Amino acid sequence: MTYVKWGVGVVLALFLFAFFHYTLPQHDIVRIVGTENRRIDFGENSIFWASPDVGTSQLSNRDVFFIQTQLPNGKPMVYRNEDTGWGWPPYFKLDSSNLQAEAASLVSPKADPIWVSVTHYGWRNEWLTIFPNAVGVKVVSGPEATIIPWANIVILVLLLLIVLLIRAMWRQFKERSIDPVLEDVGEAWDDVEDRADAAGDYGRGLWAKIKAKFGALKR
Image (cartoon, rainbow, N blue to C red; front, side, top):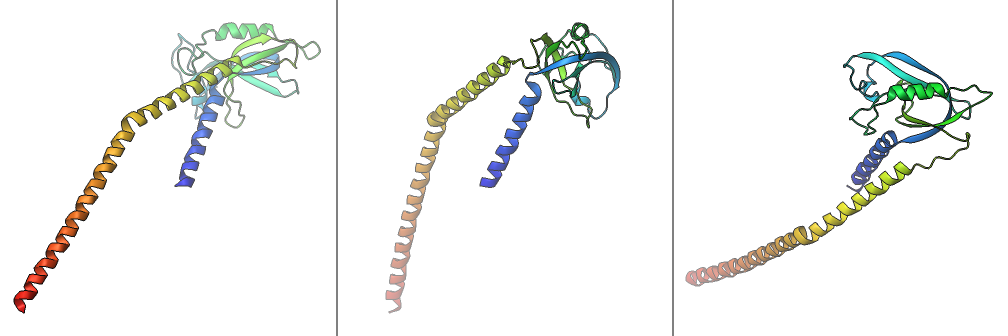
């Protein structure tokens, strides 16, 4: 049972880590090298794409904005630019067209770079053809700029406080409601065992008396 508990705990921890890593905002320092509008046919990886832009129809394929960038180490990074609307994750992003225009205005050459911080959520995976979704861009001083993830800090602290509050409420409920019931059940069970032992002793004594009387009659 110990290994089962540890296994369940590890699986649950990995699931929570993946969930928060995908959902919480992240920041990349990049140089925007281009933007495009591409027609996408959605397949098995459709779960990693956002819903259609607010006001558009549900289709199996549609146009998606992309922002093409380059990291300070020279590696490429491509972001999709889709509305999240009122769904999940709760970024309430409704301005993908405005963000695309802003990103297009920040395209810069390698000789004279404009470094920007792209706020996004999601993962980039070339095998599954999935892209992180950009939710904002901001010009920064350079590739060494540091972005403090205040939103993540606040969200995780609040979640920790909620977990501690629920744990404290559960402990109080357990002490006030469950433990007394368990104690009463234990006492009742002990009383039943005592009565059973007494009944057994009485039965054995009665049987011994009956055997003694039968023995006397035989004699």
